[in-house]
Length: 275
Image (cartoon, rainbow, N blue to C red; front, side):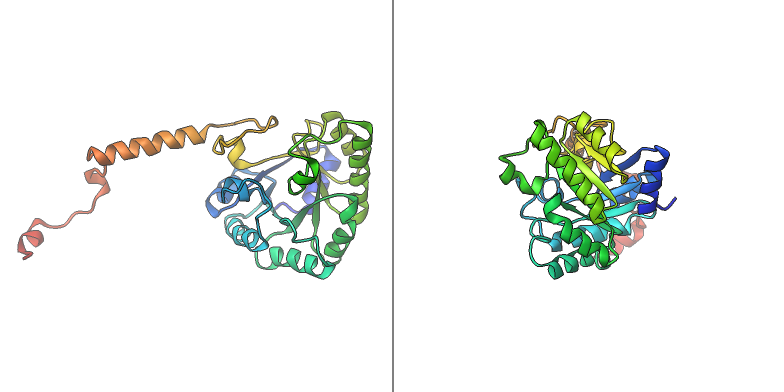
């Protein structure tokens, strides 16, 4: 079934959990989509797990469009969410709307996601006025890790918890159709989920959210630079891939690969006539 923002809203009303994963290329997007995922986030996390940066800050809008295009070609049913990278929505409103529009028009995203709460409601209103749905993102917002002093859980004290709750209410009022809650205490995330009428998607925010999202490379055990506490490795494809690469190297060196079944034949008489 084709997933839309209405699908997400209906799921919250019915109490059905929403499933999301990241993807950054055609092959993996196709696999995730065929598995039945509700939504695919083409996240600026590609800066770390695909491009090898230390954080998400160097990612450009061109990077995001490039990868969103690939994902859109491999996706038939999942809702595609294009991430607005650092500084793509921090300038004038017209540029912000244009960048969001490019992710949809050129990249093939169905909607966009941007980080931040109360301070970015004007941007959300402008983007939604352009008929582009917006997913919010509050709590630990990786693009702001310098301001946070690192990648730290947010909302642990009364003041911080109230701010995140206020941000959630503001995002709903501004027209966001859903909110990602990242690295906030589980009880706070549950409180927010019960307070707002739009779906909450948790990542390190407990089971009380309306849905969950993980970075694909994290949950498959492929990205090994570090593993956040909230990640469950559903598979260990990193190690399995490495073993396969080593087996390939060994078979090539020992002429065990390619075998005859992997090769193409030619008549011996043709070879004999060659000079």
